Image (cartoon, rainbow, N blue to C red; front, side, top):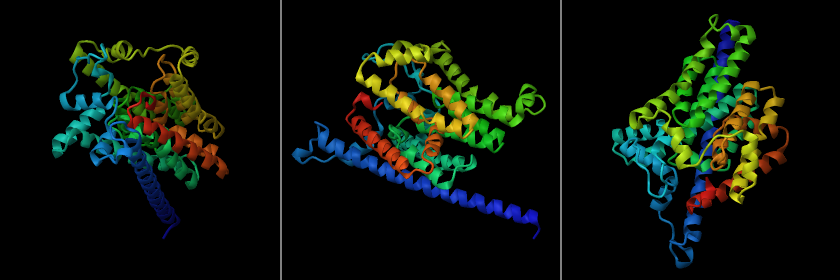
Length: 393
């Protein structure tokens, strides 16, 4: 056997070992975190829900536990999956229409439900949880790819599984699908599989409005790959720009759907403003305004700022595309005058887990403190979610 054959064999062996390690870490984190959430949800519904008080011997049923995936914006996604997009608004929320929600998740739920005959809610739950499991798997592979030790890659996976509001990855929401699109685009771009990266980028931009932000990573990575001369002369090697060009496809799809349904290509922006009171403003002004209002707004803002601290270790590790991506992403989500959702928007950014894993390198106390904090806050917020309290989102 030649030295070249030995190199290929070793590379194949390492790839297989990484894949097995990723599967083990993802499966363990997924099962442990989801079972823990089921227990928290059961306790919340049994002991705290006024309709099912444990003091009267009434325990939460399996149906009630299953319906935990269906809260708040899940109703909008369900309506899209069931009936398609429309311009109708509920009486309790005038000017709010379902064009505020991106199409990939509800359309996939509709397709799976039609293909299998299962209820739409069950189909969406399967899609969300499968996407989340793949997120955990790809996160481990990505961490190893950028040079993290395997124990740090495992830590990153558990941090994603336990991060505050990680329960939304298993709900009838598009969060897991959008994060999967980002992760896939990132890992395949680093492996220079440009068309695969582009397809995942389309998934990201057609799942969540924040998904288009992955273009920041792809542009930064293209610059790092080509150097400034090659970057300014893309005709010499256009391959790194393939996913960059494909990212907006999901956004253009939403523009087309909006125009076809309402006659207004920018109906998503207009309904978020009129129906959800979400408008864009300079980040610093938004942050100052958030701290001037109620405790819930302060909580969401502080939580997102806490997750943004993961940028520092990314910069120290010189993972520049990741750090630039995180900076651009947080500037984007802080540029809105309504902080509701800031924590779960932040939790959907894959690179924060890479940063926090690097932050904990060589310090067991940091690992335990961070995992404990994430798990505790997540359990409290899931209790609020089970009881349909708006603080949970």
